[in-house]
Length: 85
Image (cartoon, rainbow, N blue to C red):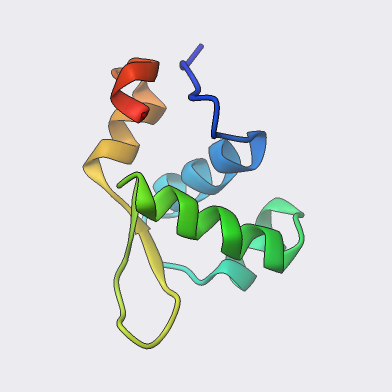
């Protein structure tokens, strides 16, 4: 089981897993459709994940996100909750 920081939600795991498995950059609407969450909520969670360097925005004017190596380390369980704060 991966450690999750207090600021994280179950949706964050789903977002990271989708981006990792798909190997693509995606916008919050596409992510939301594929993980069955509200688009606005996913957009908020993507901004939060980007703040913590688990994903990064790959386009300046479009909200397109890709998982980072730090995000991949989280999915593998290589990080502690301290790493995520």
